[in-house]
Image (tube, rainbow, N blue to C red):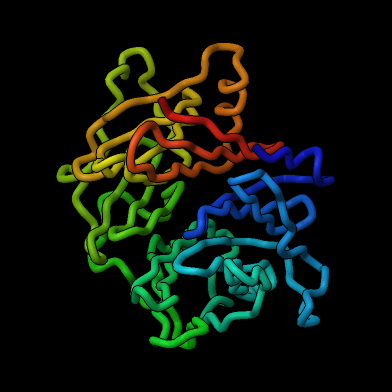
Length: 295
């Protein structure tokens, strides 16, 4: 869908998120760029570049963390500046985020959730890699969104599996922490026991016993809410029922096919909700963005 390697020099994609308007936002480490991909026609726009002055005269650092909710994309750079990018204007503006300077340099997981619809206001969540705590920033009820108060602990109890070991974070009505072989579900700050909620092992466990879950997304297909996981151990995408973690289906590329090659090097995963029919999935690799249909 988008050939990033041909369009940009020194491209090194690191993460991809999907905004509320369906656009795909990518951070890359090669030259410290934030890219926007239009899923309708595959056009790519550079929104921000490390070391290059913005129209405001401010100079961003290399992108570090990215999240999206409501009508904004949030980017934290390595200079510990938070940027808010409106989906319509696409102009990065500095945003107050109290305590961002205290985030550990190894922080990898950032999530956002709109919490005052229809206002364009959202919470931010970050997983601390040293302590396993999840910090939540809640803004005042006015726009533009700012976070003048430091984050507060989100988890009300200690989960069975440490969030410090989580590979991915998804925040919707619940929070979901992806681990190597399952997820931890968090309901309003209370983590479920793994015995109460976990992902079923795929039914081919005798043939493929090892699991290496790396990426997590969710989508509604018809009237079914599902979680989608990328398993790097077998280059496959697996769907689970969101309500109970039951195995639904899995997809793998045929040996030596282009799909198999794409699934072998995933950096980002985004599944679109559909009212009918199989959902499309957008896959970020080292060289571009691909679109497949999970038939």
